[in-house]
Length: 65
Picture 1 (spheres, rainbow, N blue to C red):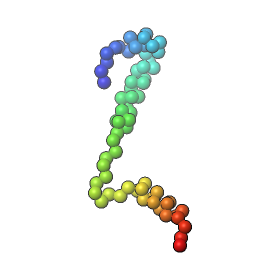
Picture 2 (cartoon, rainbow, N blue to C red; picture 1 turned 180 degrees about the vertical axis):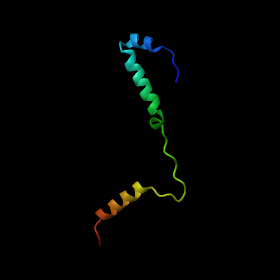
Picture 3 (tube, rainbow, N blue to C red; picture 1 turned 90 degrees about the horizontal axis):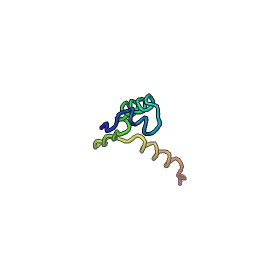
Picture 4 (cartoon, rainbow, N blue to C red; picture 1 turned 90 degrees about the vertical axis):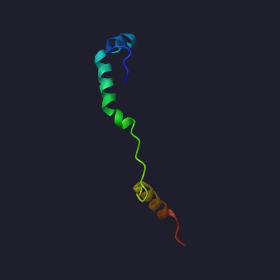
């Protein structure tokens, strides 16, 4: 993360208390991995449980002949 302006400069520029900016920055850095997480690709043979549950629900709603 590049810091082009100091926290005090940003604070003055936007009228926000420096502690709030520091808190937002810390929260972002703490949560960045989950924000940019890419789910891993399923390996061949692995089953997607959510897809199976959706299919079960679909089959339960279909009329039986």
